[in-house]
Length: 426
Ligand code: EPU
Image 1 (cartoon, rainbow, N blue to C red):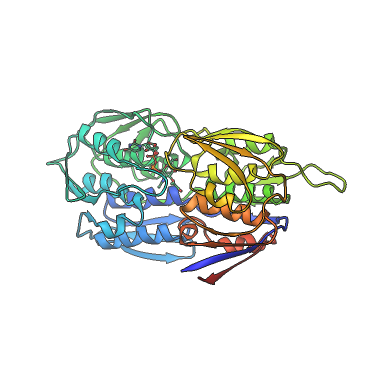
Image 2: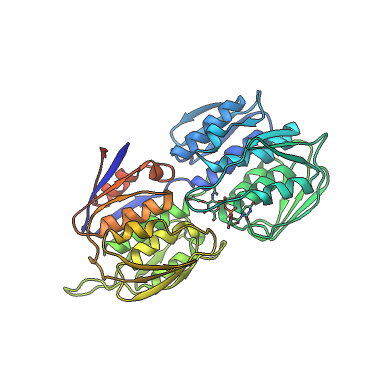
């Protein structure tokens, strides 16, 4: 295993280019199952998770070809309809093959993903929705064994919780159903809009993009896709927070500022200056003569989009650990998403957890010191990277394979911003 070493305390400055979004790439890859053909996916990030998804598709019989950031998936000759435990356990988003396999073949056997470090993460809403479309789902031996004779039948599906992958799975299932399906209280994350655009480009008829009511008029056939993955809003947010936490300034490019409404407001609230164009965000501290920036304290509450994203909660907590006062962070999406707190304590952070709340008493800019810490999940790991970049001295983060799941060229991008960061064998 490898660890990440950071010599911290250096303000980040410069320009960083954002990659395609992991959480858009995965459903778009799943959607290529829907119809035989050569599908072109552009701006595809090269990540551990996207590689795992390619293996999952190849396991079903697909062929893949990558040139630069373009991935071509040929799903003409799919031979299997099963997603095995060995692949699903390493990446729970594998459950996204359930809807499209059922739509094309009328059957699918997908391992139940099980829990993960951040919570129980059930898929009951995916199953409820498929059953509303006429699918019979049996849970046996750790697998969902789902089947239907003939096409699915459109219906109204209401989500108790606006589940992101649940909405995506049902969208993909419903595009080839007979009649009209309405998804109510659907998730509105931009990654879902990307999937809607891809499906409509393939000949589907979906109305209500970016709203919580999606109406899908089923069709009998689709054509191959040629679609571009949207920029990764979570990667962009992570770099913005890292630049802020080190007292630096910089520009993230190839991003969509409109996809980060809540984070940009929170950063402004913390005292930062933000300047946006359609595809770039410049972040800087107001000019101070001879004085260090003071990070203001801002409360956050994670919410479904357009609320503050749970995937940027851990990173913002690292920033608040360096603020001038106390703030409250309320995690409402996942029940166990404070795993980074114990590790941040090792770097000198003062944070108390009470159920879904974390009370962060800021130590001031440069108030943390480097330490050996352990990565526990993808976003928790990126908060440790931010803390390590801001802290004085050396931070060693073990188990960095978590980071490789979701951050393309992390070391190169941070080095380009002036960070001293490298990998070593543990
Ligand atoms: N939920 C249910 N039943 C379900 C599905 C979800 O109760 O059948 C609950 C969950 O327990 C949670 C809430 O609904 O409390 C929202 O979960 P959601 O289903 O939206 O999460 P997800 O689709 O499994 C995606 C992202 C996550 C991100 C969440 C929330 C992908 C591949 N994953 O997960 O991304 O945190 O939405 O925005 O899109 C990450 O990238 O690090 C990551 C974990």
